[in-house]
Image (tube, rainbow, N blue to C red; front, top):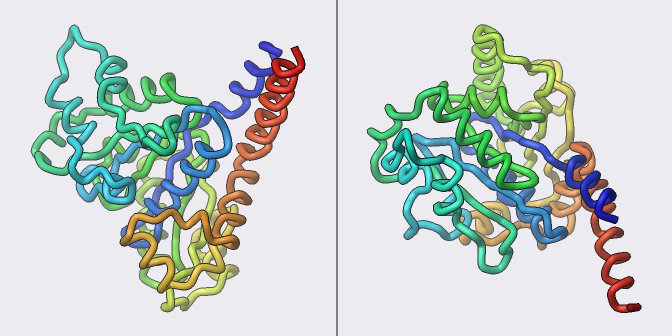
Amino acid sequence: MADENKAVNEQVKKIVALWSVCSVGKSTLACNLARKLAKETNLKIGLLDFSLITPCLHLFLGLEDKKSSIEYILKSWQDNYSYNDLLKENAHINKNIPNLLCWTGLTKEPELIDKMGDIQARTIITELSDLVDILFIDVQSDTLFIPTDAALKAASDVLVIVDQNRNTIENTAKWLNNLHARNMDISKFKLIINQYSHKALYTKNKIESNLGLPLLGTIPGVSKEIYDNSTVSLISLLKYGKFDKSIENILLQLHLYKAVKKRHVFLMRNSNWRNFK
């Protein structure tokens, strides 16, 4: 049984970066992917906000009054003090979902961003990937290159989130070209289309042909009114059936949900065995 548990953990050990321009639902999707996995397994799920100029995960998770994790880490950095210890101490843990850990971005002292070098960014990601089983990283295309590039390079999968608005597609294409110019590996980039926008100008086929990325999935079935009201009030969209199903499908495509189901079977067998004894 121990070997089976180890195999499941190794199968799901991943870093997933969510990357996009502003206001297309990237942070909402990151939160709901993390919530879905955390609720359905006892795996440790990590959520890192690396959109350091415009962070918002703390708003989605009701952490407005908490200190910024990344801000504190950069202020406390010393050569003789481990990032691992700092990250453990500054994880925000959801009371309702204790296996969901969040590290929030800069909010009050943006001048500290200058202290975020490539080594610091890569070390934070490496240490976090050791602390959790699955790490989701929220980054933006039009913010700092250092945390963005570190996240995209470290990720096993990069989810490119777009809506169907013409400006979104054009800006995303521009930033993809910038990544090409910076020699970024685009082969692990996968497209997700969020269909809540009323300004739907491009079809799925046109979006795929313009961006040249494989379509991993779509987020359909939640009206803009419900979507906006839910995100403003910090309510998880997982209670809406079609949205929840689309989240499940994305996890299946990432080969995460299958592993979670296997873990459920293992835990049930283990529990039945203990009860039997």
